[in-house]
Length: 133
Image (cartoon, rainbow, N blue to C red):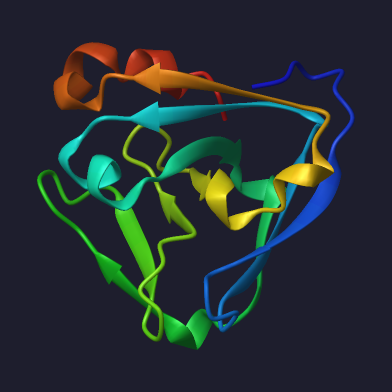
């Protein structure tokens, strides 16, 4: 993620049906993480891990349902209508958010880097994500 000197702009995002809408403050040059854990691999989630103050749910909070597994710390939120997981509270950053890059307009960014993350071995690699938010 960017350093503290980066300039952030608000970007709107949504689930597939548009019932859940959110905004996230990001720089023009972003790095997303592609995780290979059992859940992320199946849903194609591309992680943008951010602090709590750079994220807001604009509408549709009542359309969200949550799912927890394994340790139960991460709060995975899905739209009840279309099933898309646009964001969640990650175990590596329980005071922040992970936003799905696939739910944002990629044309709004000047550079997008996608790096792999070995979530199948989460315990050994979680520290690499903890510093991002």
